[in-house]
Image 1 (cartoon, rainbow, N blue to C red):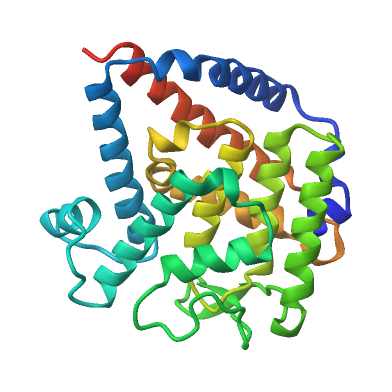
Image 2: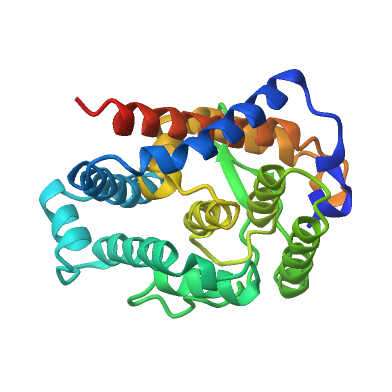
Length: 281
């Protein structure tokens, strides 16, 4: 919400980010050509993307699973054996829901709660519910002690904060104030700063990324795993989050490190899609 309230995304963009936006516009136009690749190749890309997305998103959160069980849960709808496997199947179901229902899923509090409910399905009692206790973002200092890196929005303010964020984002898109991809980057970033759920905020942010990109005509997340690219660039991901979150609560933050990371991640996905779809052999 603070990114949109402070109008941080209206700041002049560095030349490098303008170049990224131009390249992404070109890639968006190439999507239709890429999607004309032989059906068996496209089917393979989508299957691999789904497997990689589920595996990487869970692995980022510390959940690992054997390859044979991953395939069984993701492709064969096997029954989960434990909580880790529930998380794997939950992410698969949430991502599949977005792929199939993105046109009917507006950016709003209820959509976010539904995504969380599906992704966290199983034995968790607060799936789809806002947090009721604070969940500070902590890290280990050089001496091995926990220190608070970021203090998210307090629980009592979460419903209002999420409502404000969604309204500000939708208003920004409706009024065409800024490039849609910049708005999408701001949406995901502010969601992470609010941290509205007790857990799985990172998982939901990655799903929200795919959904927002769909809304702006970017379908690359269906064919290439954005989550895998995030996992492979995890150090840069956390560095961008940390750099941009300083001063967020009073609107004094610099959103540009995060925007640059977000656009670069998407650019990497498009490059991979074009290489695989247009030069499959």
